[in-house]
Image (cartoon, rainbow, N blue to C red; front, side, top):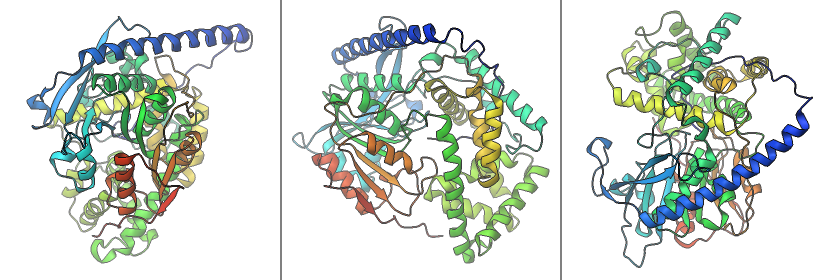
Length: 528
């Protein structure tokens, strides 16, 4: 799950649904009947689309120059229906890329398809793990073609948009932490306007921007690749794609890894999952502050967590009063500093910029945290990522429409978990006034024929709390859980930890998992 606080504002009150009681029974029956019919027709539509894709294959070519993906990686397109209930209706094209296996023909085990998360992340960089000779993937790349794709709505795959990208990145935004009811009203207005902007700019796509549709797309990609079964690596939101694919297409799975797991429980998707995130972010923020304090000789930000926190609060207050460089206010600070609780690889860079600021160099902070209005391509990508994040989460599930509930839940959480709570609330508040019909999430469970799924998770992950991995492990019988204890970097399979790396290799190369779940010691802590 990704967090982008760029638009640091959002929200609105939706009128409560009236006449709940009077027509409840017949409506529910009609609704469930309609729901069943719709699922049947979508399943049939997906079969038709997959059969067509299997016949058509993929016309692999050198990637377009402006995609920034160099040879020998090749690119192509897979055609899917916008609406699977209408397989002969409007089509969209999904961008895919690949690099062939580096080993012999005899060593090849098919394609390994990757999703990095989001919702809204592009997987097209995945084959560069081979061209960049990433040591963690040398063994696997001998056996597999590495395949990436832009999910529907993302990047080159019928991209959606909710607001002008330059407007989206403009700074400074409002402080996400409200000082008054007026602040909350302003944020709610922005959220409602954002939701309306999604409808205006991308209305036709919105009802079809769901995880189940992305899963159907993934199955069509599998067919287009000529693969009887899918090998899949999903990280973060990619694990929810894995969970839903394993439920909808259990017999189509060959190998599947879920790394840093979104809690697949229907009750958690997506409102509750975001509240859980706020708690986990606070924990990991403190882990980072402890590390900064331990390395006070390098950063001079204080030798206790409390002192580092004081420096943070001082910085935040300064930026609130007078945005740094005219552009970096509290919202921009959170946008930059949140990468430290996310990824250990950000610990040193974030602490270095912070340290420079306290020593009197404000420019480093402006360069790191302010938007670059000249980077139009980057800003388009950033706005698109946020649009997809919002569209998928808002359309996947029912969200509370009562502002009272949002206000109560987030006010309560903010007291003990202030780092991300309000920023996260405004990011998600467009879902309260979402213009497309909100779905019921898939009930994730073990379908007949599902092979062992490998689940990898660190105990202190901020973006996808550990309970999510435990929940998926429970739901997928025969799965194996590898726990990286006392670590919290998001995306464990991308880190050097032999205890994890060797098991990932073994699983992908042989299909074998350990006889029991495994706990690994943490990967190395960053050094300043």
